[in-house]
Image 1 (cartoon, rainbow, N blue to C red):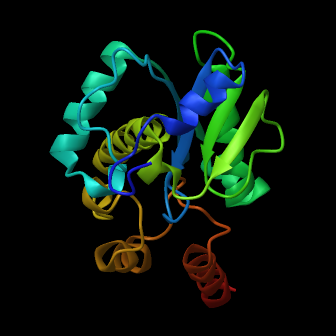
Image 2: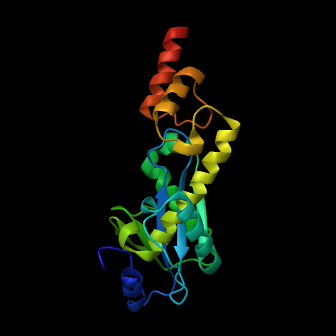
Image 3: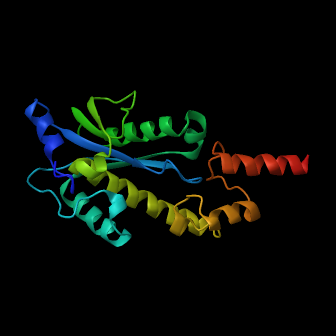
Length: 212
């Protein structure tokens, strides 16, 4: 591991131990006040690793889109979501892990080893797994998954922004920016807001208090 860019060391170690179908898994969207949490699972072909793979947070939106196009051309990619209702019912960690398991289930064939970004493996992970802290910065498959999840969720939030103008989701992706918070107070809570998140809950509770 170079410490500067992700590499294939984790995947190689799993393959050396006998794994045959190794995937990287990452999620995006734990922090926003609106929209689903989105996860991706990616199996890279060691002979066709796209150039430019890196932690999605270090890439510009344009570069992320370019690399994402390369990823889907040469890798097995699956992206899945957990809904706002599932976030509110399960909590955000449970919903993120649900989205991860859904992404894995959507691959062309079941993996036998998953490299998962973070410090916890989903309880219902359908295969052996390894949790890797800051995996998107050091593991190529997880970096690819981080890009796939980020690009897909950002595009979804742009679509939702057209249906609910004023909240700025096309630029803030549902995070609690100044514009988003002002719109929550002035325009109210939409069906796409996470009611279990404190800023949204407080506005709902305040509205009920005023109207009662």
